[in-house]
Figure 1 (tube, helix red, strand yellow):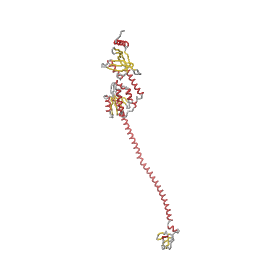
Figure 2: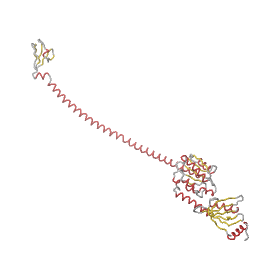
Figure 3: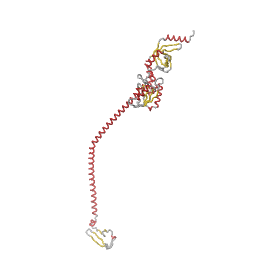
Figure 4: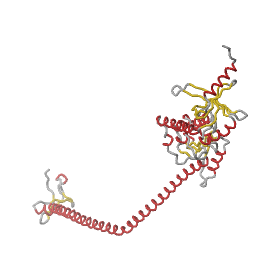
Length: 413
């Protein structure tokens, strides 16, 4: 058998493939590499992985010529909101091609965005289901928004117009509320979104006591940039963050996984500022309501006190008259008791005096003389001791009736 050159063999393969596979085929695959050259041609690598082990089980090179790529890419990205980039699953219509020099490849002719949309939605659902199974899906939503969210940690690109709009809106709020913002820079589109936002969240968490709320904002941009906010790690970090997270990533139509787990989701950075201002308005309204209630309570209390005071004022004369009557009655009662006690006291003492007077009368010299006793006097003094008398002394003896004067002749002791 005549040997073939490599070129002849490859030509044989090409002719065989063209004869066996003349039609276009719809193929499901994942993009593992996407590269656009200076001519506008897009070269891709299609892969298929084992669903259990995630190991590669098939791989093929593909190409989209510039004239086709310039139509397919905008259509795909506008429809799906997903960048035509590595890591997504696609349903493409391909023509099998083999070139003697470049080998086997798939020439892309069309793409079905609905398939990718379904896969993206499935991926979002799987992330949300995983977070729910882990019990963290609604943790951030369950946090209480501080009554006065004035200390704001902002995650955004420092040069983004949306960040400037956010700060301007807070600064120019109609009520003049004070807000203190601090920027934690992050990349808000491209491959480094997850990495830089996670790093910013870590930096805020270290100083979490210094802030009331975290705001993640991104200005307007392509819908295809939203896919970077649909990652498990980013969603899990925000869902479990200890401060309320508000997202305003500049897209009105679609919600990302990050939006689904945040405490509050708004459409734009300006709307995020308006949300914080509305929180302050609500607190001010509550304060005003409390002030009105306090005023009403004070007025009611003063009215009640005034009524009680009027009642007391009107009741004072009657009360004073009653108290005076009671005091007068008490004084009369005491007066009678004093009179009765005084009379009893005087009667008792009068009786005692009469007894003493009777005893004094019974003990008087006249009574003793009347009983037969006599009283001997010398020089007007009663003689009680005979030894005091001398012979020849003149003494006087008083009797009940009359007086006897005598001279001492003798004495007996």
